[in-house]
Length: 136
Image 1 (cartoon, rainbow, N blue to C red):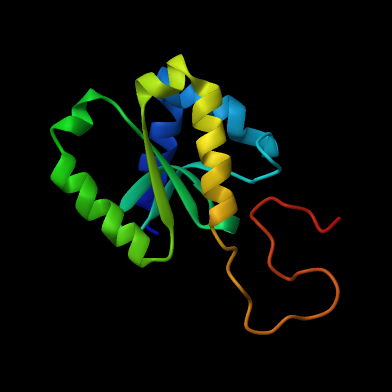
Image 2 (image 1 turned 30 degrees about the horizontal axis):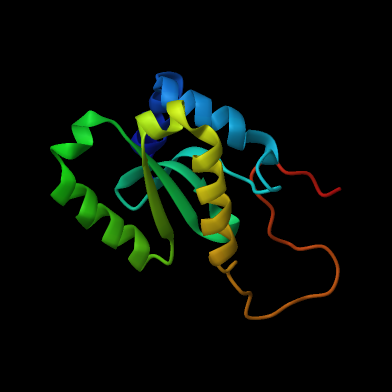
């Protein structure tokens, strides 16, 4: 991940759409089924709207402009899925009009997603931590 990608992701977080803000308030801080979501996550050459790394689940919100870029979105989705992620998409309007249904669909998708398996399991606390996570 380049510095440019990080800056771009940061700028997207600062200029989120209203639908992104609504969904983020429901996902942040493990509010949805205890799942850890991040927003505006750089992956490959893309910036994902929301990602649960633990479940390898990507949630994308599409505004009206995505209708014009359907082919690009399809290619992007295939590349992300080749990396082992499941991608689900919602229209901004779905989030603002029926958040409960969107959250239920995200929970269902997360239940279907297998967490990555470690080749060697070691006893005790996991040496792998998310950035900013303490050892407690």
